[in-house]
Length: 103
Ligand SMILES: [Zn+2]
Ligand SMILES: [Zn+2]
Image (cartoon, rainbow, N blue to C red; front, side, top):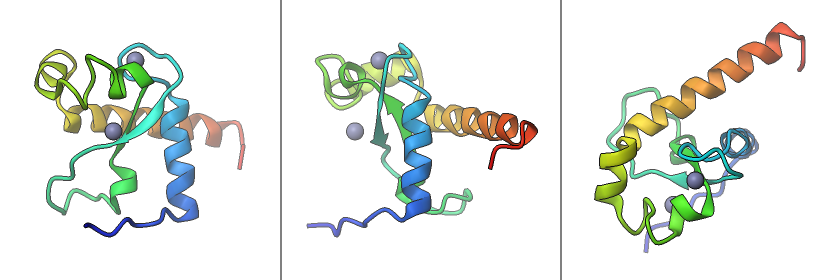
């Protein structure tokens, strides 16, 4: 069995930001889905940063990334594309917070 790495504080904060974006597909309240990592060297620190927000249905429901991955990716984009989108949105959020001086 693979070892499960415990998330650091920064990682947990990142994941709660990811979840706060809402489901990438339908904007409903979301949990984070850890995507399948592809190699190293794209500036990713750990698998906890390779997470995307998905609601329960799009995460683990009948037609979800876990149950119908191929169809899911064909309709909504690959995990990597969704990850890029997620990271962009978080970047935008952080820029807004900086602008208003929230620390
Ligand atoms: Zn959804
Ligand atoms: Zn998942």
